[in-house]
Length: 454
Image (cartoon, rainbow, N blue to C red; front, top):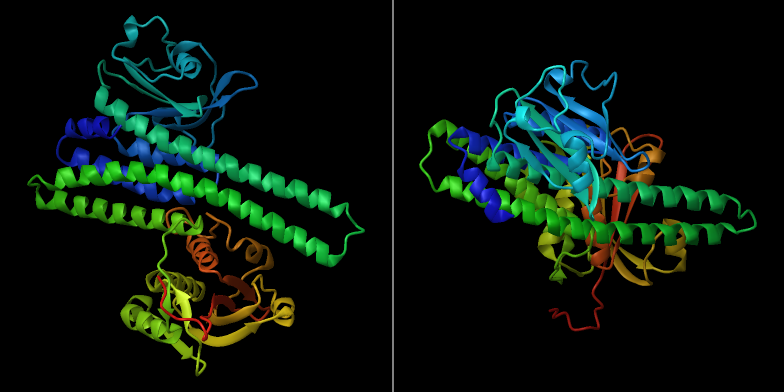
């Protein structure tokens, strides 16, 4: 696949190849925060295919029950009413070029439609067509189709690029479907649980915790696998950027190339966050003075925050066993979350303190921790607070209240994954007067144990 895409990019010239790489990089980043299939289809039609010099684009979703393709998004003359499709096209499997692609699961490029007996003339007849299936586990999920008024408009380069877009779209559809199945299982469990009126409150809480753990474990496995596959696609894009960078390009093209490289770096950070959430990130715990690490982190990043920070460290805070680099990344995520909640106005308060976790502490603080010694790190903002319904989902992967392109929904999920992998716990709380606090508990090193960790 990598060699094929490299060949496709090499067939493009000048700003065309750079523009293609830039569009694919933007897609790789924004795809993580798209919340449903409808938004995904329209994003692909407008912001991906629409920016790659395709004259038009129609995306169909497969309906296995009726064995039909149903039009769900369009670009160009076939999309005159924004995101409203008045009479969606329905094409039976096997009928026409798109129907045959849905039946066979094979991409096709037609150089001259006038000589193809399967072509179904449209209101504006075309001369050439490209049709690529959306496939998952051998099942056709849909079809991306584009026509052109000139013969021979599509070749191997367009086929490879559109196939890459289809692969990324199919992977996201899989993730959305798994998320929906997980939420449905959760709704079914809640409905069944409501019928168990004889259960005590303690048992209800334990069952909810068990379900949450299993749900996060399942999504974690899925996210980890998706991250590995997505990293392969990102590697191809980054490799293409390196190839383009080896050639002398005009200054204005260099600007676009720099943007694409920056986007590739952001994509790599997303992969790192996904691996952290799925608890597959390699950590190197070391004896760490949490107070010193917080102060150093603020010194290195204070210019980027643009808000005031107040620190209150408990004297004699115990040493913790954490990975310093991963801890700094998690702290920066929490501080950025606090800053965004205040819209750059207000003060972030960072506190530390020792805690002995016993049955009383577990019950009063709602801690899911083994008995022992812990150090608490709290980050508090002066924002509007977090509504109760949002607070319940704040750590869900890919959940975000921001618009597409401004948030991936992985920041807090990454922090939770890292903290759990470190043997700790994180709790979010928000009061009726506004403001929110994130309490992170890290296990302290036993003073009677040798502190040399490997």
